[in-house]
Amino acid sequence: QALVTLNDPVYHEAAEALAQRMMAEQRSIDARIKYGAQLVLSRDPTEFELAALRALFQKTAAIATLQPVAVTVRGNSRELTAMTAVASVLMNLDASLTR
Image 1 (cartoon, one colour):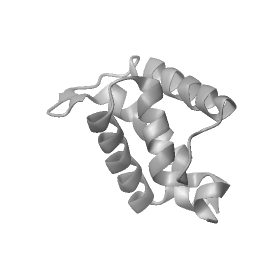
Image 2: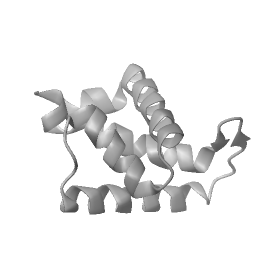
Image 3: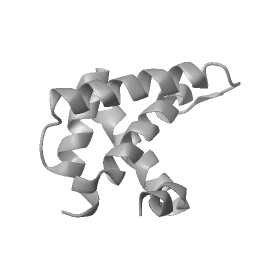
Image 4: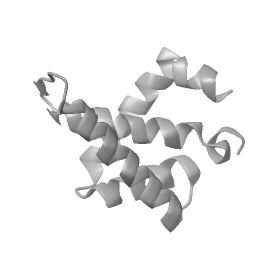
């Protein structure tokens, strides 16, 4: 099921919208991830989950710096790309899909 949702354009748009909300509501990366988890999972992420999602954000942001990316009206699109990856993972967790 995760392969279907990860490749679905509607899920990508939803993940991007969630990422934008996470970025608009919170300042730090950890606070954004926690906020996203609360919205999607109705609970705080565990320390393990938080560390894994933080690492995903950092790795995606680093990869995005290798590609030419424009700054958008909402801010740094590299950061949005990385936060969208985090939001997509949150939305595709078993706890999110089956609750």
